[in-house]
Length: 476
Ligand code: NAD
Image 1 (cartoon, rainbow, N blue to C red):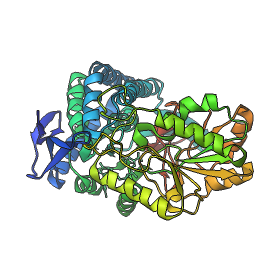
Image 2: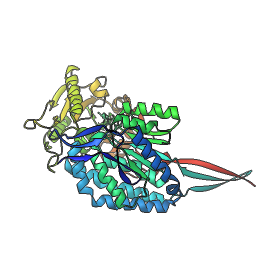
Image 3: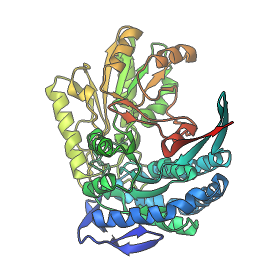
Image 4: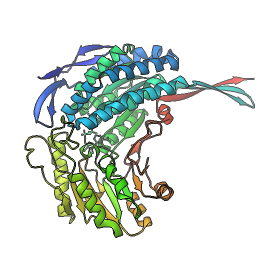
């Protein structure tokens, strides 16, 4: 059944799009069109920003504890619709359903986390000085534009909406065109949670819709997750308007296996650390650095592990590898696989399309060995289930390879010696590094350095991006 949404969610209501443009939503597992959405234009954005501006004073005037109540209501309403949302996300972007469910289950946790932060938020601090005292206030920045990618639509919305609402901002969300159908379920959730009209608005569309949101003068801050290329364009527009911006962009993170790594402990982490969501995750450890003394043994383990993971229909919970999100992404990934071969690397696993899956944008999980860090497959983000394995002689060399990258989003160090691994992790130039884990704690800041972006989401630090300081000096 086709799902058609030609409206946007503005001021608490579904309103017809000004734009006659429509975008098809395609199920990547079947290549069938499953729905259409409106390709919103600058008029739709202006209406949404207007609604967010109108709602801003009352929302900002609420106490943070009152806003926490609303965040908890969103969490509760989301929890009740989690299975439905997971299934719809899977139909749109091909995330294997078990993984989609795990990702959605994080969402209420994130809203409740920011509710807890709002509960203890003190908007004013008194500072005594020699000439008098001062009240230092933290006030919401104003209307926020949140631009979301397709790989984790609801979690990445929550990472932005949680702190924005806790801080007292109102928001216009622009979901990715591939994953906009679930945004309408989210609009229902917002209504069920009694979020005041205009506090959260949703406008669907493609790149131009996102650009219109960034360009709108009423938007005071942009929170973006997506490609480095789009991030640069967004940052340039924000610079021209001196608009605040946080960018969570791509990565080419290194997973360093130290020579004492216990492969029985690493094996269960391979999928979640190195190739989660069919490799379409920004912080995946897609460069695997292995000590040359253990190279063959580790490659064999990686091969066996990835080969044993079922790939196929993403709505079947048994499959943990699905298709890629769209035809373009498959083309991109396949062109990198061809490039790797041309650069002289060796394919030890995969490298083609899986047998028996003729329909759907499938690519086999692929491992390259004989890779050097100057090859493009080692330097550029592939965003698919493709790992490059590089060997090193010394830990210094491993650190040098890890840091010789334009990116700096994630990282991992795996060792039987936690302290030794921690020392190595300290030397990695990156926003975050996991030690013997692939889990990302939401209580700590997440984001990137270099081409991986700027600013942080999650953790108490996330609130800073949505707050402005204001100082009131008072004479003695
Ligand atoms: P993209 O960056 O083009 O799109 C992400 C979001 O930004 C979408 O909502 C899109 O409509 C919007 N957008 C794109 N250009 C914009 C602009 N100039 N101004 C405002 N909004 C804009 O990502 P994509 O085309 O879907 O995927 C391409 C590549 O991006 C992938 O291959 C991958 O490397 C990377 N990517 C990274 C992440 C991540 O989590 N960091 C997520 C998705 C994609």
